[in-house]
Image 1 (cartoon, helix red, strand yellow):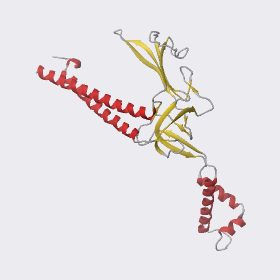
Image 2 (cartoon, one colour; image 1 turned 120 degrees about the horizontal axis):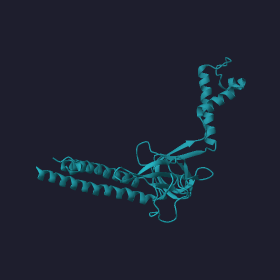
Image 3 (cartoon, one colour; image 1 turned 90 degrees about the vertical axis):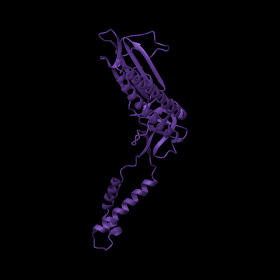
Length: 298
């Protein structure tokens, strides 16, 4: 009786069938993402409306200076790193175990010829502009990646660092939200009413319709409405500062940051879709072969 799952055709058929279903799901998911990207037009940052957008521009630090990548210290606007240690199991086989990793969450600026906005990279699918892997003898590298291939310079620790470089040309697809810096309207109305209360004579002259020397509830409502109107007018006439931020969409649509450009992003989704399709066909073939072997064995 066969005891190992790898030698059991039924087990192989079940695993291959599950793999085919997963590949089919991934195929249609990638096709949907490709359609979403293709149907989202590229916009200028200044003219982009709030909602799901696709914009392109140069990556710049949000603060006075770029952030520094943890492993190499290189200036950048976003980083991701992973440190892995080489281990051997009881059979002498080697494997890499991740001992430290991290991803930056700092906002950075995306700027085109017309304007700029902030990008919050949390939960984004980021394609780095720079990706390096090198090796060393400590849990942290003494230096950054060497300028040549380090395949022969092996060590017990492997360092992988991904960056979005300063001034990298990026395409960002996500949800644009604008935040006004004019303050809370209710607080402004309360402040306006408090100011009017300091001059009771003028307040009564404006809103004491029945001239009984005090404001009724209806007259006070009229005063409040007038205060709200004045605050709205001042808000419209003021130089409103707005901060626009692109972040993760709330409806589950893709949030992508890539140096590939709009066309490259769409091609990547299309290629990945057909990769999963081909992989799914291979799983179907393996499943059919395993079932045929199982029938021959009965």
